[in-house]
Image (tube, rainbow, N blue to C red; front, side, top):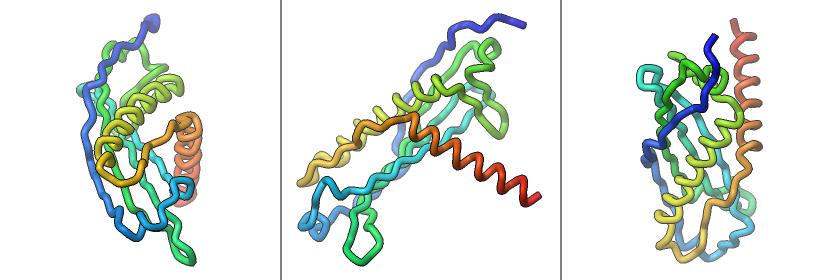
Length: 163
């Protein structure tokens, strides 16, 4: 068995997948930054042939409305790309298969932090012309990862139960 080496990677870039801005005068009139509901999600895919991992970040801002469901007034999705090298010596940190990607927790925290930071910059640019200050706050990526893991555990259990 070969010895693990440092994992080499490049951040190849980020692209906007979707953008939806429904900010309007009704929201502006009653706007209170403390009432914004923020939902953040992510997914991960890989390309085994090119050793590329992509992370999709989904951001949704909603505003509560009395006696009604919250109104989604802004959504934004990005995809960040990472190129990896020397994967054959680092399968305990990252393994890209045809239908799944395994990423060790510390590496996932690193990749998510880069992806969210780049998304934060894009959101700032997109929302800079609004009459209110809306930013993507600092996000505890470990909490985000835990929610992701829990969702996948539940889905795995459902899939096994339906077989």
